[in-house]
Image (cartoon, rainbow, N blue to C red; front, side):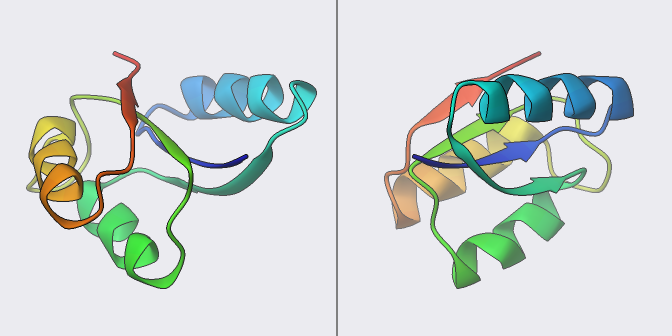
Amino acid sequence: MDIIVVEDNIVQQDLMKLYIEDCGHELKGVFSSAEAAEIALLKHLPDLIFMDINLDGLQSGIDLAKAIKQKWQTPVIFTT
């Protein structure tokens, strides 16, 4: 399963990376802002997204999750 993480806390990013890889899944990217994640989603659509609600940048994780639901219907799990 291809997964991306959208999280602005470095400690949380590292924990998520370890967990995802230990479970045998492919981590396709880690992003600290909704804007960076959305650009990446245009290039590669994962099977699942783990997302923090409060992110660096202008958009929140909730804003990005709404856009993802409208454009791609990719499942999002909030990790706040």
